[in-house]
Structure formats: structure tokens, C-alpha cells
Length: 274
Image 1 (cartoon, rainbow, N blue to C red):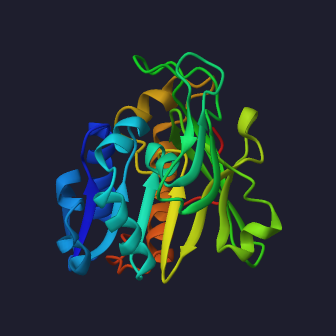
Image 2: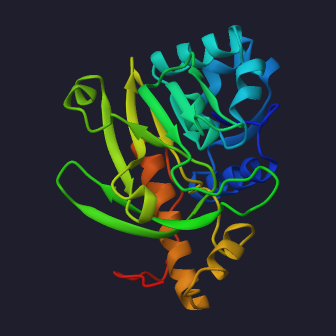
């Protein structure tokens, strides 16, 4: 079976690279991980051999232009018939029924989107300072993972740059629509806002993440974002946070029902202080 990572117009090359790297580290070797183009998605032949489709970060408007028509129809059919889907940052905006990004500014993007896996609005930026040309608005943030039994776990150092939150996800009616809150931002401007959701779509499932949880913390650009914090973490702390980020990736993939590789023995910590 194939795991497909969209690499068409608008995708961030580094997000594609880190998405593929995270998948290779986490998934069982039975899967073949491949890049996929809009032209390939526009033909239905990929559906029968695909276990998971991932649309990574980048720019939403080129996704709108490149996936218009048959590609979107095939993606939605794939998920409705039991497929698994992951959207990260721009991929999460694009997978919501509506997005409002930097509304009221010269770079705003506002509109409805055809996939609608999250049946609400993805709103961003959560944290201010975004700039297309620089890393000025990039930072590492903490998110708190939630489970249905009331369990909570904080993951620190997750790279953020321009991502959104899922407005209205706390509405009880969303649960009836198959939406489950997975995580929240817990600091600053984002405190309490929903950073990740799981959405049942027909027989399938889509998981959407606002921040870039696919970016390793010991590589760029996340490592630079960590180092420029007011209190930069020690190398040992970065190692612990990176191990826990891998745990978060594996947890997300497990919720999507794909087969994981055997976990590596890793150093962990119950509390990470930046």
C-alpha cells in the first residue's frame, strides 16, 4: 500500500521533506511513501492502493487552483469510502469547510473550500507576526493533547508558522458531526484554541493539525526557533522534546489506523521546562 504526500504547486518544499521523513520514521516498512501531483490525484487509479494521503504546509490558494475539480472529487471519495487523510497547516486550512486567514489585512485569504472534512472554519494566524519572506513570525509552541478519558499531555517545542485553529470545535453539535478535539494551544495568543481535530467523514477519517508537528526539533527551521527563545532549551531538553514530538506523530498515525514501525527506545521526561 502507498502513503501519498501531495507535492504540487503551493506546497512548501521543507514541509514536504519533513512530512516524508516523519512518515518514514514512524510507519511500518510495508508502506511505500511517494510524492503525488495534482495530475495524478485527478485520476482515480491511486485510490485503491492508498492507505493515507497527506497534504502538507504551503499556500492554500495554489491548492485551490491545482486541485480544482476531479482531484478534489477523488480525494473526498477516497476518504468517504474508508480512506485516511492528514492535513498540516495550509493542508488543514484547505481541508476545512471555510477558512479565514489574516482577515482584514492585505494578505487575507477568506473563502469556502470543497473538501470540508472539518465542517467549520479554520482561522489564523493564531500567533501574530507572520511574514511570507522571513521567519519573523515563526516560533515553537506548546500544545496539550486531549483524550476521551480526560487525559492530558503537554508537548513542547512544536514548530509554528502561520497555522490556524479550528473555530467552533467546542460546540457540542460538532461531536454529532464526527469531530473530536485532539489538541489545544496553551500559551499566549493561542491559549485554549483548538490546534488539532479528528473528523469522521463517511467511512473514513481526516486528522488536521494547525502547527507543523512534522518538523524535527533538531533540524532547521525549528531548531533556530527554539534557540531564539528568551530561555533557549539545553541540548538534552531538545532531545527529550524531539522524542516526544515523534511520539505525537505516532499517536496521530495510530488514530488513523495505519501500521506503525516498532518504536525506538527513547529518553523521555514527564515535564519539559523551556
